[in-house]
Structures are given as structure tokens and as C-alpha cells.
Image (tube, helix red, strand yellow):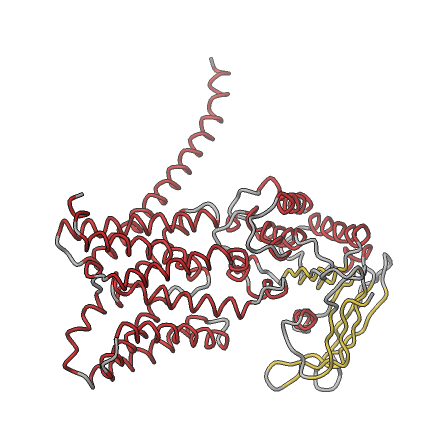
Length: 235
Length: 290
């Protein structure tokens, strides 16, 4: 099932386009990495796919329902989101529980199921022991992990992560990629992730979307590479 | 409790208590959205409405209320143009509102004296109609903040993530601005235009520093706001000082003392844990020597 697609998309800030000729398709159950050098508009690409930005031209489409007719749940972990909100007066558990708010039921108190999902998500990222700590007291890597836990507590069908392993050590990064790879396999979840750590993520990836610099005008375009456990770094 | 035998003090406590509860919760959200000065801005803008009402001789309070609501909606649209610097929108609207108020007031010099009650508040002179207005605003505010507490949490933390989660961010932000305008307009008779932000910002500022969690921050803000207003009113009655200024000073005192106690507690805890570590290191050696 096609979850998201972009056709001939052009987008830019100010007068000059930073993304051009973007043609991407994301299918259900895929683990896709987006890569490219700094300033290659990777985050912009994610925001376009999520509908947070509107393209200058071309079409961006995203499925609103799953194959079984239920609402498609989208989880998003923006780049370094936790770093900007270190003074937010919230405990780790409250924060992760807020991931379940996206499942609707705004007027009802958090249910037992919501709490179970939050507990499970915190355990998956190894942060359950710190559930009663204030989020501002955590390290950069820990903050990143609870942001991922919050997205997982949503039980998303499509999970979009922007450099989720920022601030994490090698061991934590490997565990994160293994966790995401497992969720893609077991839950049929679709993951789209911006990352620079391709060699660590490659055993779990289905595809790599690479942003390249165009020769004329310095614009970027996309190429996709098949990948599953035999990735060789792009020079 | 002799003061509670007077009708005007009963009304002051009732109106002050209701506004304190809802304004403190509003303050927590405003602070976290980096819009702490919005209350100040709206109160100054509403002064333009009061001046216009006085000039055309139509209920100045009603005009102040309406202009506060319009200002709240306008600031939301300007904020969307300056996402990274949301305080810029506040500065822009405040300049527009205050300068309009000054020009309108200069065109109507005869009524300048009556502006003092708008500037400094007169909670003990609150009338029944104002009580109904305060009660209505407090009820609407309570429904809004309780009913939409989940999407408000998401929006306050990060608007982009909230948007991808299907939260109608623009609509809720607009409603939030309207509620802010209503609370500010209703709080003006209590502490006046110049000090209205004290009711909104000070309890929230203390609660955010002390609370161990988001729900706790909201609860503490309400508690500090309520105690601050009641203590301020009592002190004002006993000392014969202006109620608005006394309430604001009481809340400021709470903030300074509260932050001081927190700093002392953190320092004491650090020293205590260092002593524990030292004694844990010393004790085994001491036992070996014995």
C-alpha cells in the first residue's frame, strides 16, 4: 500500500529552490533512510511529506487511512526537539503519555491502555527507571530517547524521525535501529528516518533516499538506493 | 474575619478568587508558549477601547472588553508571521494599542481622572454585573483549559508535532487567544491595566520553578494565585492600601520567597548528599583502624 508520495516536487525558501525534481514513494512496511550532506534539505523533505510545508509545484500525497479503513496514525520526532524545551515542567512519564493524546479521546482522562502503551514505549527505549524525573534534568541522548518513546506510545503506522540518534552513543544508536527494524517487521510499521549513521542502520534498512547536489544552480534532487544489510557508504 | 461582613469585600473575594484560579492556569500556558507579556499587551490595548468608549460616551468597560478580544485575535495572526520571535507580535500590538489610547485620551481631557480606576483597578468597587462577567469568564476558561488540556499540552510543547498528530493547531491557538483576551478584560477591575499581568504571570512563574510535573504546575499555580489574591485583599483591608497594588506585591513576595526557599533547599540537598558520600568513605577506614 502506498502511504506517501511526491511527484515533481519543487520547494525553496525565499526566491531560490532548495529541492527540485523530487519523486519519492513510501510504501507500507518499509524502513527508509534519508541521507545527504548538511544543508541538503533533508528536514525540509520530511516536512513536505508531512504536510507541514507546501511545495511550490508538484504534488505531495499521503494516505489518510490504513488498508483496514482505520485512521492512519503518523508519529513525528523533529530534529533536536527536546533541546529546545528543556525548561518544560513535565515528568518523563507525563511527556511520553502525551504521545497517546494523538489517539483522540481529548476529553477523557488517560486510560489504563494509554498508561500501558507509555510504559511499554519507555521500556523499549530503556527509560522506564527515569519515568518520574523532570525532562529538563535529562541528558541530550536521554531526551532524544523519550521523544522517540512518545512517538512510539502513539502506536504510529508511519513514523517519521529527523536524526533520532543525535546525542546518542554507539551502543544506544545500534539498539535504536534494531528496535525500529523490529517494529517494521513485527508491527508492519513504516519508518522514514533522516540519519548520517548509515553503516549502523543498514542491516535494517529497505531503502536509502539520498539527496544530491545538482550540478547546475546548486539544487538538490533525490536518488534511491536499494539496501538490506549490504550497504557500502556513498562517497 | 470582620471584613467578610461587608458586601463589597465578599464580592472582592469572590471575583478575585475566581479570576486568580483561571488566570494562573492561563499564565502557565502563556509562559511556556513564550507569551508571558501577552497579558500586559492586551490590558494596554484594551485601554484604547476604554478611551474610545469614553470619547463616544458608550460603556467604556464594554469597549475595553471588545478591544481586548480583537487584540487577542490580531496578535495570534501576527504571531504566525513571526513564529520564532513570538514576543515581536506582542510588542507590535502593544505599541499600536497604547499609542491609540494616548491619542484618544488627549482628545477627551475631561475624563482623564476616571482612567485611574482602569489603570490601578478597584476590586472593592466591583459591581454585580462585573461579578457575573467574571463568573462567566471563569466558567468558560475552566471548560476550555480542562476540556482541551491534552491538545493544549501538545501545542504548548511543540506546534509542529501537534499538527502531525492531527491537532487543529490554528483553531485552538485562536481560541486560546480569545480566552486570554477575556480573562485579561475580566481581571482588569481587580488589579487594573498596569498590574493585570501580575495575576497571570507571577503565580505561574513560581509554580513552574517548584512543580515536579505539568499537572502539578497547573495545580500549584492555582494555589499560589488564590492564596496571593486572598492575602493581598486581607492586607489591603487591614493596612488601608490600594487592593490592586497590594495583591501584586503579595504575589511578588511569594515569588521571591518561593525561589529563595527552592534555592536553599537545592543547596542543602547538595551539601547533605556530599556529607553522606564523605561519611560513607570515612567510615570503613575508621572501622579498620579500630
